[in-house]
Image (cartoon, rainbow, N blue to C red; front, side, top):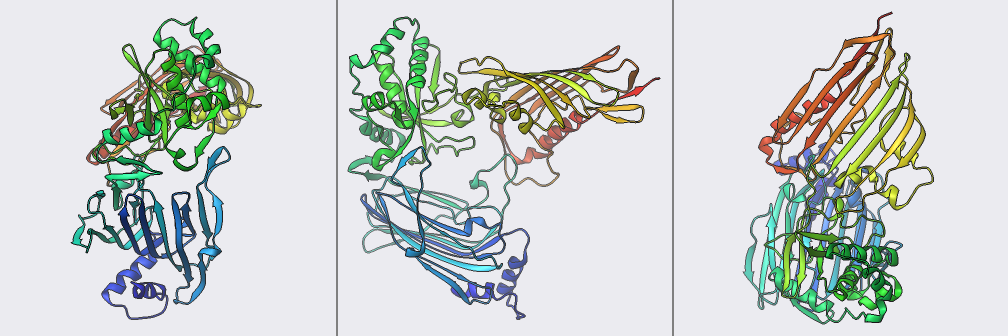
Amino acid sequence: MKKIVVIACMLVTPVILSSAQSDISTWFTEKSSNSIVISNETVFSIYNTEKLTIARTYEAVIKNDRAKDLKSVRIYYDKYQSIDEAEVSISDISGQEIEKYKLKDFDDMATGLSNTASDGRMKYLKINYNKYPFCIKVSHKVTKKGSLHYPVWTPQAVEKQRLVSGRLTVLDYTGNSFRYECVNVPEPERSSLEQGVKYTWAVENREPFIYEDMNYDLEYYAPIVYTAPNAFEMDDYVGDMQNWNSFGRWISTLNQGKNDLQPGDLYELDRLMDQTGSTYEKVRTVYSYLQQNTRYVSIQLGIGGWQPFSASYVHNHKYGDCKALSFYTKSLLEHYGIRGYYTLISAGAYAAEMKHRFPNAHFNHAILTVPVKDDTLFLECTSQTSPFGYLGTFTSDRSALMITDDGGKVIRTKKYTADQSIQYTNVVIDLEDNGDGEVLLNRQYTGIEIDNYSFLSLYQRPADKPEEWLVDNHDWGNVSVHSFSLHDLKNEPIPSGGFSARFSSKKEASAVGKRLFFNPGKYSDIYISKLPDKERRTPMLIKYGYSQIDSVTINHPSNYIFEKSLREVNVTSKYGTYKRALVKDEGQFLYIRTFIIHSGFYPREEYGEFREFINKVLKLDNERVVLVNRT
């Protein structure tokens, strides 16, 4: 493999290439890649539930400064993972070594943020060489104490990267502590060791890929091998991960004895609860108490990455991480006879779905699930200002692991439908002869739409100049804001809130001679882009459906009449609907528009139909009214 690197690094010299070398020459000059991974080899050794090692070596050609993933090396370590060795070498395209680094040359850095208590650290090396192209070779080895986390192998982890050769070897000396799932990779070759089994996966000549809109799941583009333990151990806590139920029992073991609140601790909350009736309202009261009396601090010390602080610790110190705050809320509810269930989840707007048939420990967050009459509440316990029961794009509509008395149970969190997530916009525009306008805009958001442009944050951390949010987050041209005010926030699982704004708009309409060209769909903010006419490779995911309902009243000078109006439109498809109408009156017209897009996972074969619908909507939204001066 080293020979191939030398060939790649000498391609600028005039040589006669073999057919294999000719391929490398093409790759070296192709515009579709920023880097070429010549080889990526990982050896994962499983000795027992207490000791694992991971050795990785990769060689690559960095073609330009956009290959940022390869221009730095990060090796993580903590109480459970130590770095045995590391080496990096840089060579130019002639194969001449330029720099060589050992572990002592790396910077040592904390991995946590300012509000994080963590023993996680990393060794970090930034490559400052910028004479492209150049070659890099990296090798490092770590030893893990404990076996909760097995690696995920992604030899081609970013777009515009060509992979020539990748190899994963798993040496399982236990013979039975190992499960795998492979994606875009052939099944492994198996062979016997003197003690245990050897597994080898190999991939070759993977083309560079570019993520397509509406699908950023690496599984559709690149080779991946997931690995996970059967039996495992972490800080003397022994567990089993062969199914979700048994993994849930391990989590229960970590949480045992943590509900140590005493009746006298809650006298303040007792007084509030005495005034509360239904179970629903009792949960609301507890949640409000949590928000007013605690704050979020991430704790990642030792087993604390998985084990919460005790409820009394959170109560007395007034802080905790997602695990501690969720368990504390669970403990508060239990004090009043209400069952809540500690729940593990993968958080993030486009977090990967948990694998139902492949239990693993890839969660990064905890929430609380509370069944109530005819409903289930999901509580985000880390926010001091989030609406009651609201999950947003952070944790809604995905599978999660609810921890019950009997172990783990896979559930689905709340989904916000298009008829719950609505953006209502009402605009009144006074248009002048020169095309300028005075605008009064009222907007109301419901459901998940309240997160548009981080609007909800205006309630959470009031800005000195909230009107700046309006200007910074909307492409409405040259506007001068005169007033901006927030509507009351509805504190419910399907929240609502909004704002009113009055502003002046330069060139609200384009004035050309005696005519005014005006786009009444300007304030719709559709959030989608025109889709290209090309072959689709992957399915399309519309994660969050939503609705937009617009009413725009335009008062124009009385000496202007319509030269071009807008026809009434009603477009319906399986992906959504679009309707518009225009009502004319003397000196005024009213534009009414409704756009609905449904959430869904659509096969790539439907791309043409989907593209036709989306591009038709965009075209209709860009059509303009033409007014002409009749005097």
